[in-house]
Image (cartoon, rainbow, N blue to C red; front, side, top):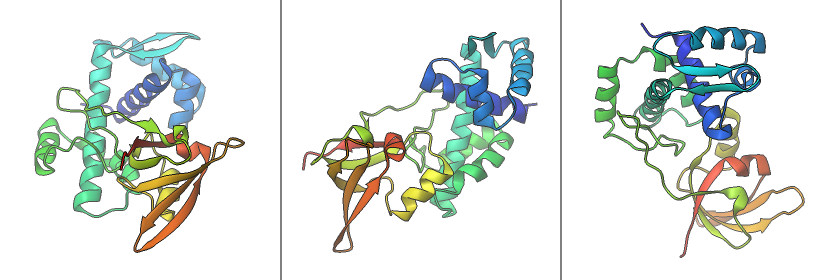
Length: 225
């Protein structure tokens, strides 16, 4: 039987490893919202399990084994398929589906996961634009850059969000910025890294100032038209 606790750890370690190369116990604790001492105890326990899911070196951090990475990708696949179902089929807002998917992801069997993927038409990206791992762990990648890297005058299209939080999703919803939003960068502030986007819609244009922290998490493509 799968352990909810173990799956939460594997998913957190995968995300940190992808972003930082190795997951430190302090960062895992921060991501899971628990004490570092509890994380260290759990990591040591997982490192002793066979087959091995992760490798742990004190003061060096944690890395997933090939088996651990595959297990993490399976969890992420279930999570992002659930987010897609909740948003696309049930109509939940994109800033609510993450929390609900977190509760449900541990209870999908492999058979139900694949049935859900088939029902949804085997989507490759979730409602936040993040890639959904395939049944064998493969993920589609596409050329993209962060909004914070865009220059004044650039015409952009929002492709997705990198590790979005509920707060970020709510923030962007309030500005009516979502996946596939097309905009023009009218100002790129060198002092604080903020970006001003001009978005057209309903016969009107709206200027939105996006702080650097948010702009770092918004993935875009440059448009030539």
